[in-house]
Image (cartoon, rainbow, N blue to C red):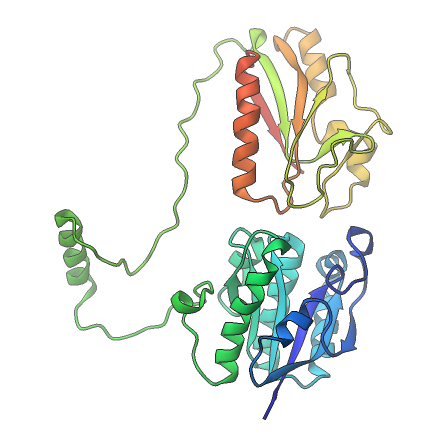
Length: 344
């Protein structure tokens, strides 16, 4: 018997529009829409009988949206739900994760989604639904669809997927009886490590960068200070077209003769939050006015005549590292002593 699947997507993949339609209320359609058509080609013994869509902003700003979405999903009487994939889109990932979690907890049927490892939805929801690892952007859709379908097909067939074999993030750990106590297993692993032999840890730890802190500024009254922001401050019109999410670039803007970032001349390119307050006074994002006063009062040596800006919303760590290397090189070449980092 062919299994019934419902697909949850956002406004973009539903073909409604981009950021300007992010406040779209939940709605449903029969059959597959957008990427659901691609899933239809790789699903086994299953078909997408309905699609439920909701704008990313609406979902994240309206707590009742999850109830509306679940009721719409329930109306199709599904056997399984697919959400996304959301790649590295933060609001979409949070929505997809919340929907998939609610499906498993309320409807008691499996739910599968896909996200890039840095999407906040992974850390928030990986303990309940199956979240398959994907690429950073929709450019990876061709690989993401069969990867998600692989897990879906196993679940439909009554098989238990495996995170290592099927590429989804570990959901939860299960208790089991081991032949040896923990202390003995730990000592055996330690001995193997000391001998240079291979061993497999029972609790893999995340890897974090270790950054050596810079020396303190000896005399702040003689220091040249620069501003770098992930809050997206840009001249009005966003001349460098910095993306509102998943930024692929940064901008450098001249403030040599600017004492105050006045309304109408500056704005934020950042998506994912209401920009009204920021656009009214961009000094709330980067404190140019305050630093100019401190410069005039001799409290700092000099405000560097450029500031650097990008958008942190959904931006991959790899891109952020590349931006920072280029920016740091320019700051060093210009004798900057310290940097003030701001976000939203």
